[in-house]
Length: 313
Length: 152
Ligand SMILES: [Zn+2]
Image 1 (tube, helix red, strand yellow):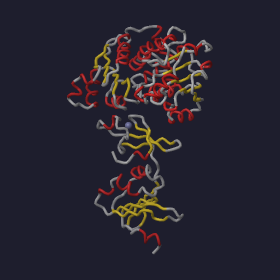
Image 2: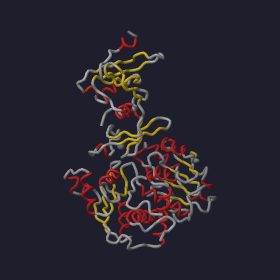
Image 3: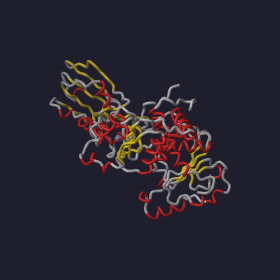
Image 4: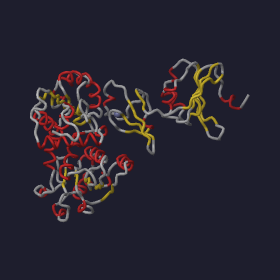
């Protein structure tokens, strides 16, 4: 079986099939176990950040360098002559696309990565387009779940915090709904999961339930995915209330499953008490490191035809 | 002369868009910019139908609407029929069908969508769940059809 992602783009998690996601996860696992420092030798990857995002950019560029590739690009379009000269995105990416072997793009407007992919002949990876998609974040989250549980089937997964605005949560729920897991949503009413996501879950017959506190269900969970509540989304009093209710405390972990792992896309504020960091349940720093392997896997699959399903090197 | 013929003047050749949902006639006229043409247009609003309901109706002389164009009307009026008239006779009758996508026709309601800032053709995909929605190819957001008030 050929690698179905060779020379393709990674724009939206919705474009990826379950098979393709599993392939990416298997390659990420393989690259984590056996580094391939020359896989992208002589390849030039364009790293184009039309808005800055330090964490994402560093992990993408590290992934390229760990595979032996080279990086060109910019970390904020405001510092480049592109903006000052008023060039359109289409013109800018056509020129950059002619220099490089692959392209990753971060842009403040939704749809910028898809438009880029339509304008250039090289693979494009979406590194975040406005409030829309950030597919490699979802891949690294899935990889962290897969790695800690050895499966993506029949898991009890809770999402806690900002379920209304969090792009990360929405994409991960979308991806995990390709597998049969039980989902638990824990949030304040004002930050509840949007209806369109729930409708999509209904359509796929995915079981889910809503809860007002973490303690209600924590003892039956395999994964807790907790996110930061953004202060600017709420009134000050509401923020203070929500912040105090949806906090994960060490005392809540006394009867949890041994395989429970806590994930967080970081940065955290105070929704996970820091004394949890030293427990075996904390996995958010390893999760952050998995960004490198997830992005390496995507680069490896788009740029080489060496990996096929069930036949990882 | 029948009652029906009294309502709107017959045309020699052109198109009659019939069974337009009430309140949609003026919108269709504007949306498809039929009123920018120099041909004679007759519009009927709130005309009674045989089953006691009401409808809007548009007659445009010397203009023949293709099936593709007709299907775009389905966004606003899913039950419309298009009659092509030649020599005062209906030579072709077509009931509109909702297409699977709208290409280069609608403007994205999301002001932060890349298609609002770059010179690109928009595409919207029809999503039929409980209500009809249109999903933007670029920003991937879905919108109710009431969000679309202007042509691209
Ligand atoms: Zn859009």
